[in-house]
Amino acid sequence: MHDRGIPMNVSDALNSRTSVRAFLNMPVSEETVRDILMIASRSPSGGNLQPWHVWALGGEELTRFKALMGERIKLYPMGEKPEYNIYPPELKEPYRTRRFKNGEDLYRTLGIPREEKAARLNQLSKNFTFFGAPVGLFFGIDRQMEPGQWADLGMYMQSVMLLAKEKGLSTCPQEAWALWHKTVGEFIGLPSHLMLFAGMALGYADEAHPINSLRSDRADPSEFMTISGF
Image 1 (cartoon, rainbow, N blue to C red):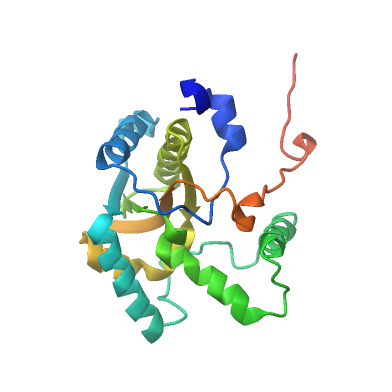
Image 2: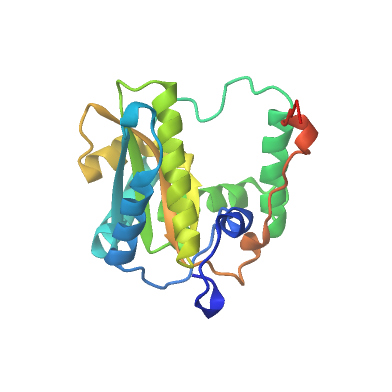
């Protein structure tokens, strides 16, 4: 809900959604999480396959998971070999520049220059505490699935993020969790026929934190939009 209890429309939800990387220590109820995940299941999928799988951790379970992650990171600071490339190995333009700029813009909000590698790694490691969010989500997909079904999973995740906005919550989708698919899989009991795709932090944004001032830019429509016949 908006302030004053006015329902948020889709345009407002899309325009106000950002990847939040600092959350308040405020709980989110199981009922709210369940509602979001259930309503999101109305997302479209080719052939109605509904290929998404989702796990939600909160409370003591999330505390236990964070403790496990803390121990694993000490043993394997570079993580585990991911099962898929989070980005293409040879990222071409304009995508390479966009990715670089986004990273620099993010660290600039924190006043961390490029040469301060330790500070940047410390910020990166906050991915693996869900940036302090009270709810951690994991998304998986059957290994049999192809790119079309991965797109369906992405639409499910987008629905989760927009529904969260409607409820006054914020999110951060995190493909970085692919670096820890073995540890995550062990903890949540991921069946062998399913593959971890990503995680997502869910909670109330710390609006006062400087990192949440980041508003990533978007390409000019001429770079991606072609409209004919009107």
